[in-house]
Image 1 (cartoon, rainbow, N blue to C red):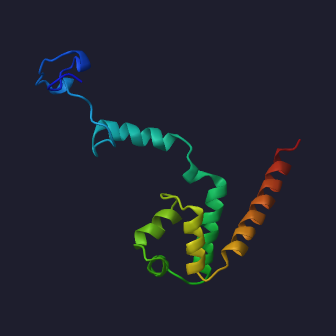
Image 2: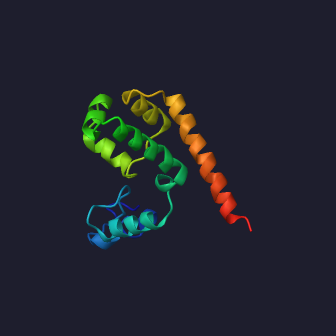
Image 3: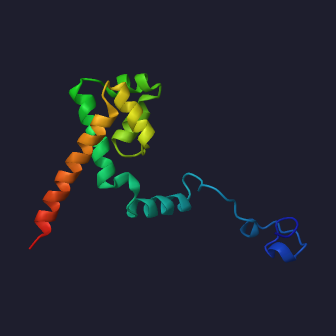
Length: 137
């Protein structure tokens, strides 16, 4: 970019005061801007890893286990040393858990992560078999 933010960029030494010609700022869109709305619209329309059926099965299993044990989101968040919103967001698929976080959540629920992982995988294999039978002519 030219000196002083000129719209001629790198090959000019002029100074421009016009805001239209300032170098664009990099980073996340400013909240409330039209770029933010476009970003959200694009993100919402793109299928993402947060909504992957296999991933959702792991989260659903974690939620079902938590409810079956009578543990609240607040109780689980306290055991994980996180805010309650952390648990709420991953349960609503607004935040993605990695494998390590899922494992810690299962341990906090007093469950064996390996056994729970195997159980979810078995459920996925069974649901895949049902889906393949539905698609067969």
